[in-house]
Amino acid sequence: MAMLDLPPRISDSLLLLLHAQRVLAHLVIDGSQNLMLSGGHLAHYGLAGLQSGVPAADQLPFLEGLLPLAETPFLIRSMEMPSGRVADVHFFADEGAVWVLLLDVTAEYEEARLVQQKAYDMTLLSQREARLIAQLESANRELTLAHRELAASREALQLTHDRLQQELRDAELYVRAILPAPLAQPWTVDWRFVPSTELGGDCFGYHWVDDEHFALYLIDVCGHGVGSALLSVAIAETLRSEALPRTDFRSPAEVLTALNQAYQMDRHGELFSTVWYGVYGRATGQLRYASAGHPPALVVGGPRQYAGHALPLQASGPCVGISPTARYQEEHCVLGSPTRLYVFSDGTYEIERPDGSMLEFSAMTEILARPLDGGQSELDSLLAYARDAHGGGALEDDFTIIKMAL
Image 1 (tube, rainbow, N blue to C red):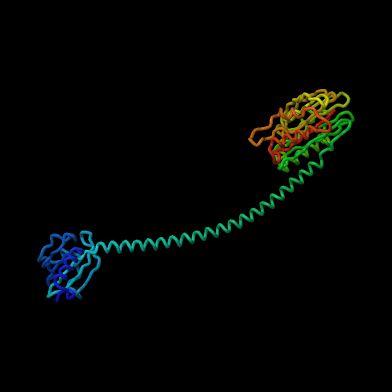
Image 2 (cartoon, one colour; image 1 turned 180 degrees about the horizontal axis):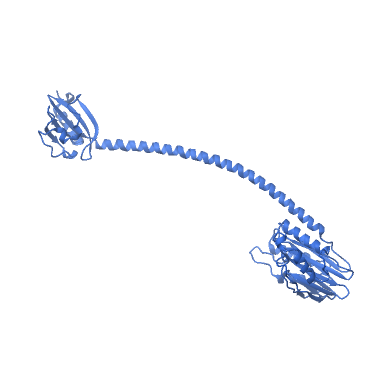
């Protein structure tokens, strides 16, 4: 019977098409399992050179164990041939012989393998996506926890900041409370004290040593904060109460020598200080002074309505607290009337401008030597100039200056 009861011409066309597309090859094996016939595109499958009359399994290892057939027809799908091609292997029994047909399915096999690989890749991708989602969820939980801890830390930090700010305000109030009031008789003593945001180590004072000698002093402890401020206050109180044994407080050099021995930095938090100490004799008009690393005081002579000449009172000596064997040189000058004496810390002129440059020392001396009209204060002018030069905001260091006008 013709194939599918088709006309022979159509059946033959289909067979030719199958033969062309599937690269047909055939083997015929007899009942003794010897190869009887072989034909078709055997070389395509790497089977060229087969010999008839020889056991088929010896030449075709894929037949091992398959013959005789247990059932017919029988199919082995997608078997790899010696050439590397992949074929469907069909077995048919026919009158004591076995026909073996090879049909190339390499394209389908490769396509199926690619689909399988893609499915495998998709599975891996899905697994990786699941792991990534799990990692992101874990990271989100950790981030949420860190955010909560950060919020708690920020709150604790704010509480600490507020407490420290209150301590600084309390320390500033304490420093201000012990500062001497301005004087009007027998000469004028005025001052300006503007602590920095961190509270520096400036403090000052003046008092009568006896009926004829008036002491004037300014202390600047290194650093900022409560520790520096309290040490500065302690030194000022030591001078005010004249609590240095066997010391003549009319002798600036002797006072600084004793002060240096009492306030060595290894016993006071590794803090050292600059100090200017002067004593004015009312009867003689003589000013005796000494400096422990402090900026020079300025003397401006002449009536206040005229420009004066600013004369720095140079004096040398190491800072208090650095060396226990330090000695200090005493200097002196006579202050006529009218004369203005200015004692200040470096915070009055070491002002940083917005562009990073520093205010010049000469700018301060020029302002202090200007003529004054009416009730104008050169101290206020100097403070306004410093704030303007700084460009807004609090100054980095204490602004401290004392004026004694004869």
